[in-house]
Image (cartoon, one colour):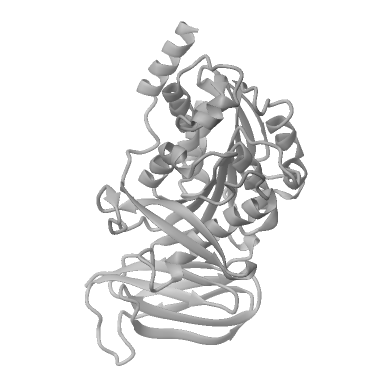
Length: 398
């Protein structure tokens, strides 16, 4: 065992990180309100890329693709706070992470918890289109639903409920009522499942393996970590430890680092649009000591149009001063395409009216509605259809 752990430490030290951590981490206490479920409140611990570490810090400026939205579901009778270790790491690489605090009842409704996770992911993503949100103009289109134990099972219920969600990842996912295993039969998007050989709470043979085998399609991976236990996927929780009857062969810190060694490049590839990270993930998966895995499907990006949302891009970006705004519609709809400043004020309306499905392009010459040249800075292209709002950032240079 000591030789295997030493090999893991050496591997983590020698294999280059997918990319250096870019962002400080801000935290906030937020409550999303779901209007489709009688204004159900979904309180969350929020972790996001910020200009400095700490509570309430302003969000950082995002990369060109925007920040990804992540929701995370806790285990049975466990607090949201014991997942800060993974939420903080995800925020540092460019994710806005909402760790839901619902589902804490003695007899939680798993279906409602899954719907909470789906809604929290959408709400975090759609904050990028809300002029009143500090995240306005900062969010991309991709979403990830995650969870541990009960929350892991609920993450599959969430994915089955909403085909617009991009991907799912789980830690020692537990079977739920309704069945997460059955829900996997409706999921054909990227999935990463973690399991532990020393998990006597949700043994892989009864939980994660049937889920993996039931997934309908998409690029899917089951990574089983030698010596990992159920409760070491989280930070220490007395209630979790109380219900666990077997021990881990690796430390909690080693288990977290091993998870992150695989999770980071997978997230970067699937939800942060970093295509080169597919190869990093595959190399680490196949060469890391203590990891056994099964895979199916092809590692490709999930097309956003297949999820029913428009695609919006700006080329060239930065603009000097002319640029072309390209938008692709999955269905005929009414559209309004506007250029806004970072305060949400309309600079120029480029398109309004009905549009067919397909690809469309319009040029912005860097001027406002009165024909005045706008000053250098960051602006937003905002596309509104009858069903969605999509925002892309652009930089004007003169």
